[in-house]
Amino acid sequence: MAHVRSVAVVAAFALSCGSGGGSGLSAAARAKWNDYCVYEAACGDTSCLPVECVARYAESGPLIEFVDCQTAKMCDISDDECTASAGTTDAERQDFIARCEAALNPLPATPCYIDPTLCTIVAYPLIRKEIMRAVDACLPITVCEDRLRCIQAAGEPLKCN
Image (cartoon, rainbow, N blue to C red; front, side):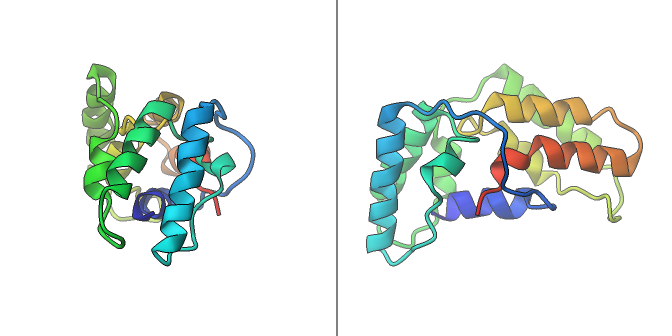
């Protein structure tokens, strides 16, 4: 369950859970996620996100891979490896990471600062490409506050409570 929380924590630069994002998870992915929540509850973690929230940002195939990887581990084991291994990256995602990090790294630590780790997170194959593309469209914005608002809006599907 740490994956979902880590995505939310890194992306939580004022994102809110509302409408938006996709909801095209397959029935198998929905069932797998619901089973995962039962598994997490048995491990003592009761913070599993509702499938409706996960459906806003997750791709079905990589989500199934993530759950299979995570449930093969003992309770309370970090899921960073499972998150990174879920799905297969492609050139578009890799190009985005380099472009995004280059755009965000030069910014000083100001109220508009966005941790460049966000670039890697929204490029995970687990995350819908629409979110990555929406963040990418914000990168050329030169006014700090406007770019921050744009990226917040683009990442909104990642934040669910």
